[in-house]
Figure 1: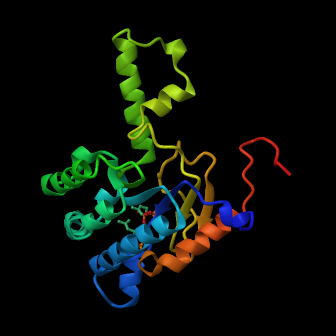
Figure 2: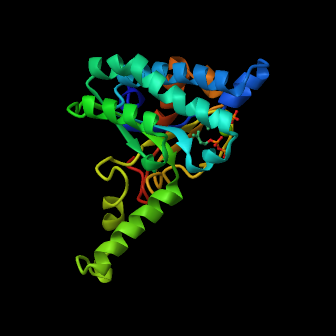
Length: 240
Ligand code: IPE
Ligand code: IPE
Ligand code: MG
């Protein structure tokens, strides 16, 4: 096996972008793009398993996405429980734990209930993890972390002078997760859009031109091969 073939990222985070444009290009309502996008999620889950990726974090809905028209927001909020019901078996078959990060309390009760049901049904698995970012914002996450730390300081449980980088990490939504090694954004847009601002510090960023509904196994594999050719240095010097 060659050197590059062995460099599989442990944690891949994806900004699944371009569903609306995919639908518009076909004269379809935007929700049809989201439905096709759900098929890409299934395909990428399988590809991640086959290629040996342990953790997949998917940006499914941002705090800013609440500003979209109600019909689209409602469509997305009912798509999630449908998707989970249809594909829950994949999580069980692959020892994959479902988790969620974000301001989950903002989700409609039915969406949250189904999410919580599948999260507890898969909580015992430790081989793989699928993390959905829902009502997620990087700034919101950092704000929530700072608030939780401030409460501890107020209560006298923590001294301000003892706050370290690790303290902040420990107060994130899923503090035990390692940082993503690779962040992929589809649809040709080259920005972070408030995703994992803290955790992406040293991630390799790969921007792919395909719209998310067109992003399947082959494109995921291509993104991983781009990653495998990168040299990560973390501020140090490359090992030659
Ligand atoms: C990404 O696709 C999915 C969500 C943000 C929920 P978009 O809906 O942003 O699609 P475009 O960017 O408008 O094409
Ligand atoms: C980012 O995509 C959010 C998700 C993919 C869930 P957006 O389409 O919302 O981001 P912008 O508006 O293009 O920056
Ligand atoms: Mg978009």
